[in-house]
Image (cartoon, rainbow over all chains, first blue to last red):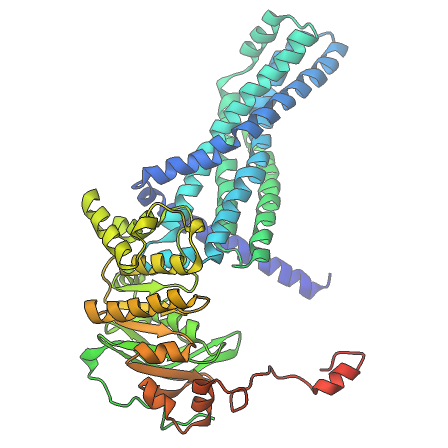
Length: 254
Length: 283
């Protein structure tokens, strides 16, 4: 890539970041007015949250089971299988819960948000609202953004709980780790700071993934290819940003 | 190609009688000029037709009038207000006084027919539910779709969707109603119904109407004034009957649907035979 191309690429990146920041500001300005229609927000929490429950619960169960199996195998080498409960809990609450939930959210709810809003753009529904003097940012974008931000920590919490059940199932029921030791070690090792870290991470991921999904849909080119491209960008950008933010937040909480 | 004399309005309208005034508007997209000085007056209580071949910027003109885009040069005045000088809330205030019928209806797909028509009322008024119900049913009855109130937009035909969109456009009793290609893809019955409704809205409610279309015959039957756009300018203005009698070749070609004339049917290309016989595409 030549210097000129580098510059264009860099400028385009900066322009997109600037445009996203402006969109976030416009969106935030519509957050409070959007609460005038609580029904729309509840509907979006249902769309982003409740409709993602099955995939989140299934993924949580299997991730927890794998964690139980791998954790048991590793801890057994050091003769500390009883620590499986604390290892699984800390791993799920601080890392796997928020991160895997965010990645799944981007793939399920994020793509649904982008394609829905993109199709509304392509079929002139957003323009029609503007002509009817209704701000689509307030009516369409803000409730979906709030719905995503509220749903993410709830989904991450459910993911972690089901994951713990999966780890306990494998560790205690299948591998024979002492049940009392599993739960008491967990209780002793997990502190408020760990739970706070998990909540903060899932909230930040919720803001990032919902913003990307809504922004991509809202600014999608109004064609079939444009909506498809925006949906792909949502998954890629949300996944990369989630992992990047995870590193930053983990470092901040150390 | 353009006959400047025929592009003048037949009779100048007093300022207070003009609902929409487009003054010397220039507009370009990516350096390609769409308008090169367009002047249009839409008079109160009349049906004004904006005609022109495909790609002459008819829909772009509607975007300018509804403040979706801004002119590069010139003025667009709606209800006497210069749209370029309005803030967001003032623009919305102007839009509350207008309704628009989109080419594809643009119904909100997650709302039923009833809720689509009720949408602007719920957003802009605090009317009690029984009154909203009555208002919506009245408008749906006017477009013959009271029985379809509970259907979802996906269950409607193209013509029905456009009638619902028309009911939604008039539910707030706008002063100005804009129709973007209202006749495209309609069967003869739906076409007749839409034509009748446009005329009825104008006569019964006194709504000023702008109809953008290239269906000359249909427009001629309802329009009071008409403008023909061509090559980025107003090629002719007057009543549809006056346009029919125009001596301008471009106007006559459009009004009679002639393939040969100043307006080219073919997009500019190299010689047909040369391209067919050549292995490579010509420049």
